[in-house]
Length: 143
Image: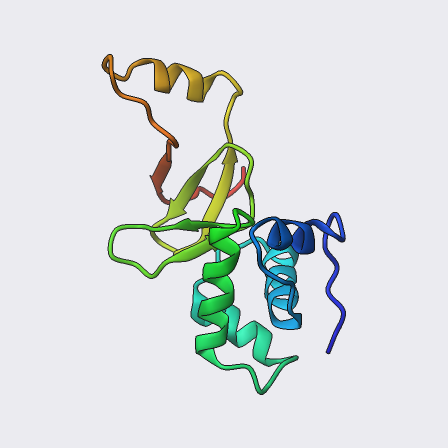
């Protein structure tokens, strides 16, 4: 099995162990694929990338590994209306820009205080566990 570069190397194994799960070669490789090219792939796209090196892996295994990585808090799911679920390894607070023309998704860094400001407008008695900000449109060519 090809080696996968992770940063830090033991992050996956430790997070899985903390969740009562063990690291498997398939989980390690899928996590590495997501970390290497952070383009918010669908499960089918992850499957195609992984099959190049692990031809015997099944789509069901890819789905199960992705679900495990989500449950362990190593990746996030990103959904855009009726499109397929996409996977994002960026766990820092950020927004997404969905280019409706090309279908690409870009991470957008947010100012540190912005999410606090957004959360502060909730009515009394409401406590949001997360905030998702998505911009939709088309990216303009660089000038």
